[in-house]
Amino acid sequence: MATKKMNSTATLQQKLGFIDSDLRKPKHDEIMLWADENADAIVQSVFPETEQAFQSHFVKITKKRWEHAVVSRNGFIVGFIDLLIEIKCCDESHSTYKAHLNGRCVLPRPESQGTSRIALEIKSILPTRGEIIRQVRMYQTYERAAYVIVTPNPSPSVVKLLEEQGIKTVDSNRRA
Image 1 (cartoon, helix red, strand yellow):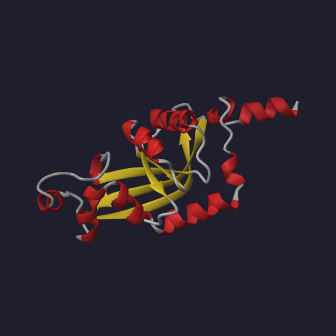
Image 2 (cartoon, one colour; image 1 turned 180 degrees about the horizontal axis):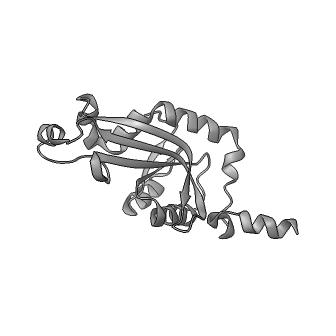
């Protein structure tokens, strides 16, 4: 009976066989804390076009949410984004912001009202390429954001493949 209840309360990610054992590791928490404290630097390192906007105070991080629930339209929890960062233009109309940056919006995947969301997936040990891409694709189905994998020492081939798939990476050992 307990098995049935566990299956009915499992996230879609768990039902598909993706169990994130990384959450139980102290290294995961260490990387999460570092990512939270260095969110500005991480965003600027993976989206260098935002650097001028941050320095000019035209954009700022307005929200950092740990373990953000990714929810389907029917309210079912798909999984959890480790750290969701929200960036907003400081000028509500963001006309000054666009004029300052040659009329170009440099925020990654801008939403209405000049807001962007960046989803950080923290991995103390990088799983297989297929597993990480599948996890991100599942989240992309439900959550509009730019996706970034934060992990120690990703190999150049992994970085290249993820980049080709539209997924950015940050080496947590390089300390942005």
